[in-house]
Length: 98
Image 1 (cartoon, rainbow, N blue to C red):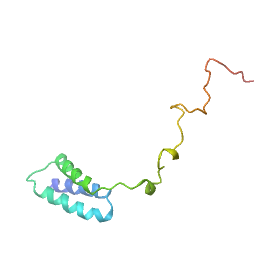
Image 2 (image 1 turned 90 degrees about the vertical axis):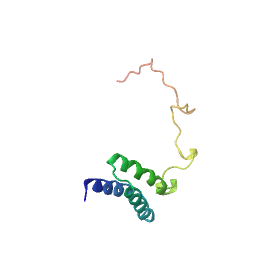
Image 3 (image 1 turned 180 degrees about the vertical axis):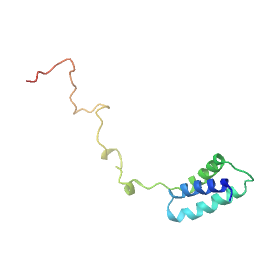
Image 4 (image 1 turned 90 degrees about the horizontal axis):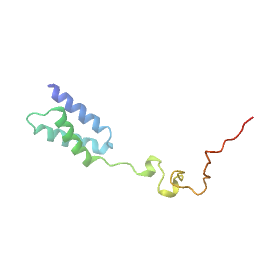
């Protein structure tokens, strides 16, 4: 087995780990078929071809599956944007402690 074959297998395996189980086999077949058509390929070309195919098989999880907030009402307001409840500080004033 050539080192290029090992590199291609490692790249395909790495990208397969991010796919759902039903999509892994289909992606692996498509990537191996696309790479088999190339007479000679380096690691960079293998990566570009594999990632291009991977985008067709990757489906990101929904917000409810990841537990992330849904919509702007579920997020805390930011004091940087101008929250009306936040009191402005007078930095010129010193407070004595003691």
